[in-house]
Image 1 (cartoon, rainbow, N blue to C red):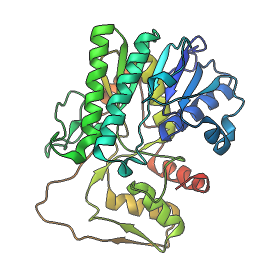
Image 2 (cartoon, helix red, strand yellow):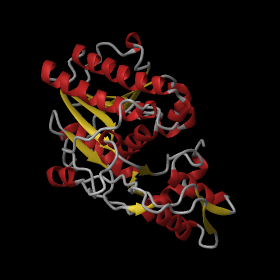
Image 3 (cartoon, one colour):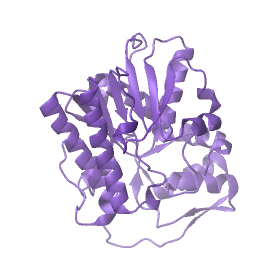
Image 4 (cartoon, rainbow, N blue to C red):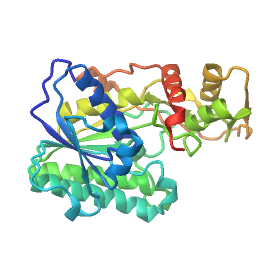
Length: 332
């Protein structure tokens, strides 16, 4: 999104606006507003607006920002006659996901997306951005260094533990159907792994656990053998990328959102240690297994880079420092 773009004529409905993705976007737009850039009006759909504003008072009294109490699973609770131009659908409980049953996760993603697509059509919303997941590709082939958007692999639909990834693929297909049938301009952002000030520490995110250990533990513990390969995009880059794709992504297409700089979990733990707590030890809890298939989850970002000049602006070290600096504000 160019600095000269005038988005003040737009009105955005944001679902998932109180979560990791949503807070990144709200801070992104807050920074732009402070810089006197002409940003869109934004309405956040949330089940508990007052609780969110009590916890994050910096989002109070923003002229461009409003809140509507509602739930993506309850169409009757959605705002009526608001004349939204864009809908950014980012509502998924990624942090609380492990507490949900596979059926609950699937239902939340698929039914929630269908409800919001129906709403967009009924309210004559022009553009719809879905935050999907790189998990829709399924396992990364052994001879593939990075997933391109045209790779048509998928997770095994007969395994209940794949409910999240299968549901995201179904949500993407719904977007394609609504683009084809209703000409709703749907764009898909396939999101990979991220780190930033709103990342919960001490839950099921490896990098969050390492940062928590570096700040509060006696050592940094790697739960497996440290061999899986991942990438991590800074939360500030994530917000910038999503905003650009919402406005400029080509309808009917998907874009990978993430860093293309790979790191093993073992090296990640040592990087966190070296960045935050050089005196602490790193302990690997499992021994490497010979001849095991590599575990790799890396996106190609050539498409986003070539079409919109999107880049990884923050290094992993900078992202780790940013996360640690705000760790006292996180509700773990």
